[in-house]
Length: 153
View 1 (cartoon, rainbow, N blue to C red):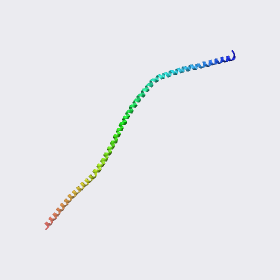
View 2 (cartoon, rainbow, N blue to C red):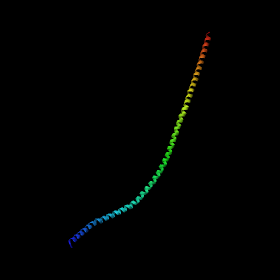
View 3 (cartoon, helix red, strand yellow):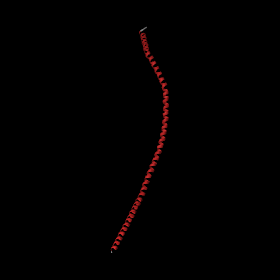
């Protein structure tokens, strides 16, 4: 055996020792990889039903949201109708207010004139009655004076 063969033999022995030294961590790493694989499989088995439940819940929420959207569309439609009715009611109220103003203006002027005329007639009638009463009193006083003058003669 020559020097190079011994060197190759020493090198092969060292490589064998390196492989043996590395084999233990590799075997332990294999156990770790197997345990991780089992854990991932168990996690997969447990999460599959959960994901199915989540999927069903999301579908139910989507259905509920569609129903809410349909309800909101109906409410918006009814609000639009109410808005139209409110605008019509506002127009009717404005028209009635204008009509009341016109009727009030048209009726107020003649009513004031009629009231003033009635007041004037009452005052004239009262003044006439008062004048008649005064004339009767004067005539009575004159007759009493005449009678007193005739009685003194």
